[in-house]
Image 1 (cartoon, helix red, strand yellow):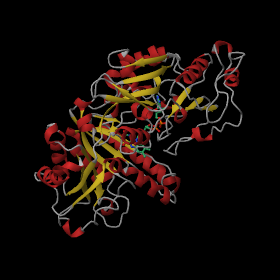
Image 2: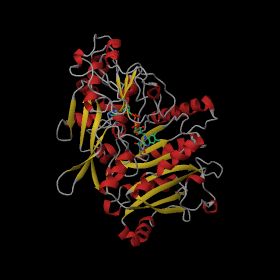
Image 3: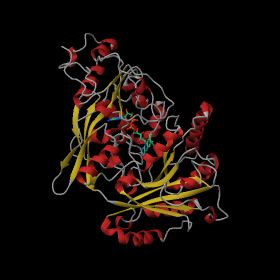
Image 4: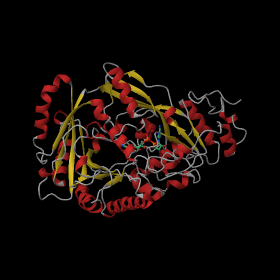
Length: 527
Ligand code: FAD
């Protein structure tokens, strides 16, 4: 007998009821797809593209699971086929097809339940249980509105899913102090490539827990995450200050991220920008805090400044009762920094407003038409020992005309990343996130996209040729050799975990690490 599960919104069949072994009339891929049947009107097109706008691969089915058990059944059914794969699609904000499954099954994780739930952990401690497809913006809204609490580690942009960022890392200005999002998870529920539902944590099924964190979706679909909460700060003093030289910028930024917690800001980020009035996306106008602070006064730029300047972005949390001390606190903390006096911008905003700041950038990009155009983005993690050379060779030479969007560069600390997780980071204690967030104007055409992709390759090749201690963050490689290089000495463990949790290589085919067509044994060449 088929059925039982009905999608709450679509009222459609999703998977056969009961023993899936008997749900399909045969074992061919077509039989299996028919068993999944769903009405032919299900539109697969939205699952064939992503935010990158450069990869397009049609799946055979785009399903809307609402329970973890739905997902387990789909995976078990796919396992019976010869080559069907299953990709969880968060909000499709990958830029290189990572959430796609050509000819396979894509799961729309946004439909997954159950609703967000508060978990009391004893004493004052609390956490929130969220479905893997929840957006971080939804987690923020729910936690702050209902309980005045919030997670401690965020991404800059909150239109990303919990399962999507936990499969990568989840980095923002809190990470230097609180760790990335992958380091702020108490428990996961995961559906493995064998179609088993497992609850795991650092003390129970810990290998699966650490495998899934930063695991690029290779070991299981994250159906639920338990995220610790703390009382949400009320207000944020949001400050931007401008630097003339990279040496002063990086020196101050590294000093700030290595200060003891009692003397540290709550958030440290920064970006490089063009010393240029005319460029609206990479020049002076990107420095003032949008719609809040006054404009950029070019007379304050020292005459001997170069073509690239740097902006440190800092935040200090406070409550209303501390409001009368925040000026003094901020002044004391800023006083030792070597930024250009007169080029500082400060605003007081609510904590929620601060965390939603990139939402405004999204609105503007949508209006300008650049949200829907290709995004050949490149994210790198580069050790502090190599970052000055990178500045000279990449920011000041290769990227001297900018990237048509933000060029983030700010330090993080390796000790805040648990090395048992799958995510690959540089060896040195202080390393920088470099994010080249390219927005291609609608009129620029394909040649501009190709040029940007070629420039990204040139940058990665440069880092390799100089023997940098670096990793690509949210990596995109095609060959096994490149993946082995990416994971380095942890490649053997990565392959072993794949063998254990997804031996038929069903999950997350869009990452192009393993393939159902190539047996895992052959993929286990260990450097
Ligand atoms: P998707 O792109 O849908 O999926 C990403 C990968 O994870 C795919 O392989 C997919 O199969 C897998 N996956 C998705 N959900 C699950 C799940 N539940 N279980 C297992 N695997 C799953 N990153 C940062 O760290 N910090 C930032 O500040 C930041 N800002 C961004 C801003 C924008 C505008 C964009 C487009 C991206 C940004 N990112 C940032 C990158 C972001 O972390 C990645 O795009 C990530 O993939 C999350 O996007 P998503 O939730 O849409 O996941």
